[in-house]
Amino acid sequence: MVVYETGMLARSKAGHDKAQMYIITRVDDTYVYLADGRIRTLDHPKRKKRMHVQIVHTKYNIEGLDDAGIRKIIKDWMKEEK
Image (tube, rainbow, N blue to C red; front, side, top):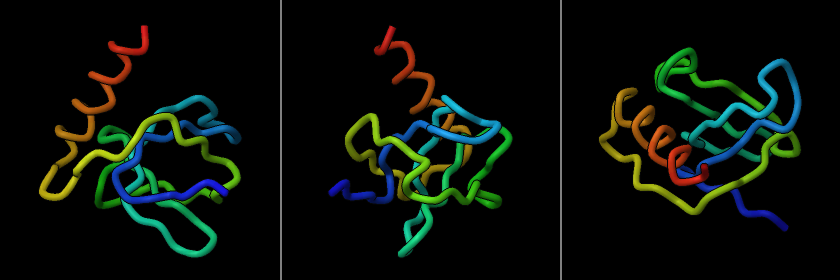
């Protein structure tokens, strides 16, 4: 069983945003709420079902971060991946 927690880096597995990287900002029973700092900001996160998201990295501390901080985390992780 996959555990979804706030601050985890995740990749979309389905939908028009397939393969897009996000940070999980909130979790409830059915959905995770995702932000990328550009189109999906912390004020307007993307709601996705848990089964449509793949966790790709451990947890980051996102407390007190703004959209620029979210973009930096995703950008730094993408550099490391390549």
